[in-house]
Image (cartoon, rainbow, N blue to C red; front, side, top):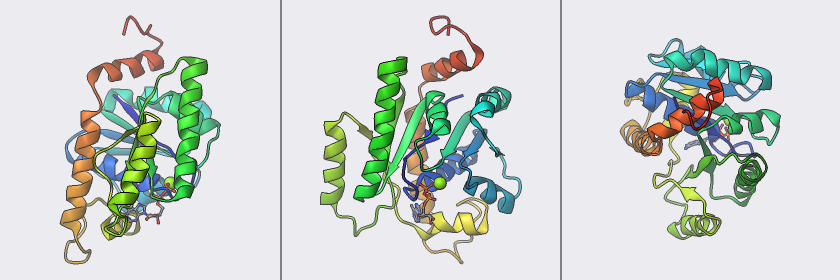
Length: 238
Ligand SMILES: Nc1ncnc2c1ncn2[C@@H]1O[C@H](COP(=O)(O)OP(=O)(O)O)[C@@H](O)[C@H]1O
Ligand SMILES: [Mg+2]
């Protein structure tokens, strides 16, 4: 059961939105998803409270450094994908969650502030690799992309990241009202009323393509590696 966390040391980067889109799309496709709300601001937990039960999704709230690993272990038998939403920080919980992840998604908007928050997470990943020999796969996902964000600006960001050897997802997450509305109304893109919210079909298409690309990035051997970390199996034995 791959563990995917969403991290960017700055708030407002689009982490929670991207995490919820991925969770709800995977659940829609039939995967059992456990969303771990690692942000003390509890955005995902609040979404869950207003949504009520949603098929294939469980939300775990009030997560601490001490409890995180227990939640993963406890939920593992009934989870296909773990998604961890993190605070806009570079603190001990963020570091712990990243250390337990198979893949770290780093949402980045086209602003300099964001790039700085993303760089802090990239530095943390390098640190874990150098000091703890933990090589954690990671990708930047461009978010809140509008037709106003020029191709040139996107290419500049991609170029800068490529120079650091950072993988960037092919599917950017667009700026869409529907992505905001699911937090206001609750539910998922699939329960939003297309008569009340504009371009729901385009939003579904975008989120679906994002989830599909993420699914392609999660090979089975990664699943084994997280099992070995959680259950204390040797890496070679896994
Ligand atoms: N793709 C998007 N389309 C529209 N609004 C978005 C999108 N991504 C984020 N937002 C809005 O931007 C704000 C910050 O996004 P959020 O996902 O909470 O970021 P973070 O979790 O990194 O702090 C929220 O008001 C959210 O609704
Ligand atoms: Mg958030």
